[in-house]
Image (cartoon, rainbow, N blue to C red):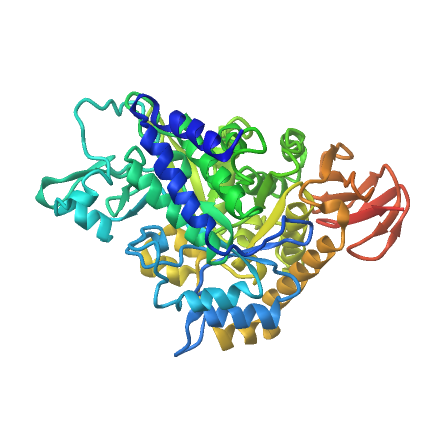
Length: 558
């Protein structure tokens, strides 16, 4: 099937009875125009790829663009470890720390400009954040809509009495429809300042496709599709994960494959596991990676209860997707630890126990209302290292550091590509000043730094120094193991209820690795399927090993 035929098929799925032949022709014209452009080559991901999740201004020097400062910091302190940099929204915005974009095509002047992006892309593969579902009410598009500019008349979704919204699923309790100046109304999934764009209007799809291609050409080797599940609105439905949304992503995948092979689409859908992985499509036609949202709360649960049984049972359901698609694994991010992905995995009692622990450790919890009037934890806001601490047991700093590294040994050993949040790499703590100043729970884990002060702390602060060194060693160890290819197979082993164990096998190279971690604070005797050298410590083990509390080993089969 030709590209034109594939595009036509997707467009017919998207627009149904509203489809016109000109839709295919206009999309074909757009793609033919982009074929004339010069496209940089990019390669597929391997065991060497490790993403850093970061804002563009995490480190700052007075009088210097923040992106330049970030480039300097990474080059001087993590050049050998970090290969891919996920820049959270780097565009002008009005709220939500970047996720209410006013202009998709301009770099926020506080960060720098496109030349700074170009310089960063010379040393690192870059992941751009595409906030495609919504944009700021202050954007020129929405302002044009409010002013009855004909060009933007259908760019947003206005209130319609005939549209049945009774089944709409959304992550907020704010009104679904807001009224703006002049009495104009618009659909707002997330907030009054974040207005959903109308993909039912073909010019919007064409414009958003153009922006996606601009990102790919300007250094985006990965494109994160933020909150993508809410993109299509259909009366009488949940308005989440609709077939039209999947078809749009599949269309974008086909266009990128046509123009810039190996540009990765990564979907962000903070929902229960089966809904989340639906964005793989067939495994070869939709997302290249999906965020593995169940991993953060399940790892936290394991180290909280000292039992790996739930994590292991869930991980047994994680199979190889294809040779072209895999999981985007993380433990911490700019948002909190989402609890919806544990639905059907953890009990309500277990979820509440994690929430209580986070509160005890100085974090915050966002709750959602249930139909029966009760409330359930929706999101845990806490630095991940602080969230891991069991107050009665983990008093010593060395134990806390070891626990943090043990948790990340799971992140780095399971199937997929690992992504490390900058505060996890830097061994940070809860930021109460940022929390109190803003009144925003998520700010507890979004602290920014002055460059010289951070560099000094990385050598003088015991916690930062130990975590930073340990995390970098973990990354280098992973990068040396061919068995940890993102596409290598995995088998979860039941060696001990307190132990998480995964065997990774690279069928192409024959490499095999056994990763075993003790999630408890007590010594555990474990019988292994084979002995070998631990890549982490360099120690040779036989077929039995005694693991100290939170100890982990990565044993390469002789």
